[in-house]
Image (cartoon, rainbow, N blue to C red):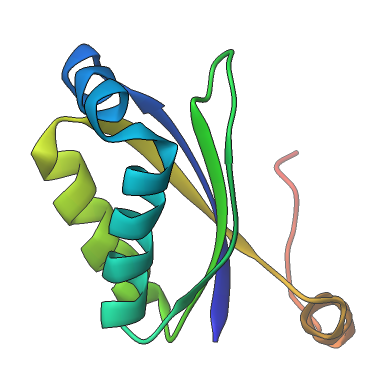
Length: 105
């Protein structure tokens, strides 16, 4: 499974929907989308500031995250960004790999 941090802010239309459905209604909608693709919502929080909602989700692959992102952005209700999250083992493996890189001089 691939883990992602999702940060989003509602547009005015999205905020109207949140006010109508409430947080539990939105959680149910998010759970449905994620589980339909074989994933799981690990955490979901509402916030205020630059982000209105923050989630951590497990999905089978990055393509599933891209599919969700496209559908959500096409709705016009939210502006989102998804960040892939790496486990300690994954970052340890990355640190062991040799990469030939030369910085610009």
